[in-house]
Image 1 (spheres, one colour):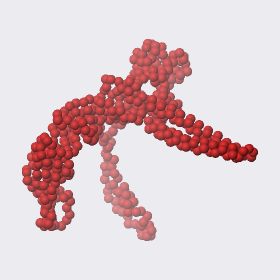
Image 2 (image 1 turned 180 degrees about the vertical axis):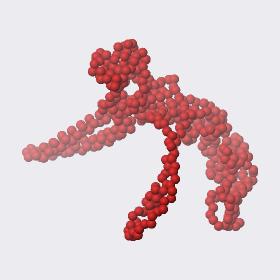
Image 3 (image 1 turned 90 degrees about the vertical axis):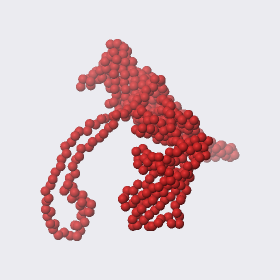
Image 4 (image 1 turned 45 degrees about the vertical axis):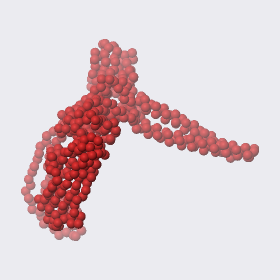
Length: 512
């Protein structure tokens, strides 16, 4: 009640000389903290000595006023109020330019409409002319029709361009926000300032990475970047920028423990129903009767609901230099840092899945301030593609840098085509894998071959390899065999594999 009385008194009793009105240019954005889906805007409002009412106008009414935070220096803030209006607010440079172009095209469309209406009026007048030269009237009518056609064609072009510009403006979203005014009722015996912050939508950032492999130096250069986009309706000019991986919540709900009730019901004898007409037997469907019986016999207990939130990891990136991020449709990529890592190179060949070998780089495990994102891959300066980035907890990070065309993988089927099985309960598969290095330098190659595993003890498997594998598990997964070989230039390696499956003659099998 005190605040309301203070507001009423302030609005009608404060002399105008003690009112201090500010626009956005006089209270610019000082810092922006970007989260994955929202942004925190921080402003500083100067307050002159003796001021009692400070007004900040021109804000976009696109933030929750309940999340407005402020603190003061050398002054006291007694109360804060706000008003929203449908007036157009100052927009970003891109949206202002679009609106000027839209107004200009609307004027040109109006000019073409005037030309069409004047020519139609002229033809209507000429249609009523009964005296004069017929050839002159005909020429004037002809010129009027030409003018109408030209104006309609130009009008269609302008209307199409107008639609495109309005779509661009809607994509930015500035026109959807009303204008908000904040009023601070203060006691300012000396000069001071008010620092306020609020959360705005339509702003986001996400981490992206650039991985550049140099096969000569066996180094991977990882560049950490941030993709930033904002359509808040206001340009961020020369602001301090911070990027955070945490996600703030509007409201935090505390889960309360609830009592768990269980019950038991004595069986009740069901009365014998009296004979009924046949039509009465279909009064309920089977599903309806079943649901009705269940609800009467065994009411479902209300179990407590639990939610979990992982707050163990949050990273914030701050920039020492100021940045300018316009309110627009564009996405801006800013580099954060770049680091070099030694890489262990090898070529992966998985003949059972593909005859294309891929170049793999293994680097040491990274720290946890590399959040997940998208990584663009480069190999010796050539762009390879992009993939999802996931900084896992593995001891080493595996990164594929595309197909190595100079490692040829061939698969020859050695299965006996004439008698592929010895009986109806046995299947034998035989293949020969041939790996050849066409590089003019040695290459380390890792061949993968998964050994079949049976889910049923009635199906047995046996695998035979011409060369024993050097490892029988990969990433803690058993029965994934590996052959690690070093191939000299033009050298080949051949591996014969045989998989035998035995199972009962009756029944079905899958997986081979």
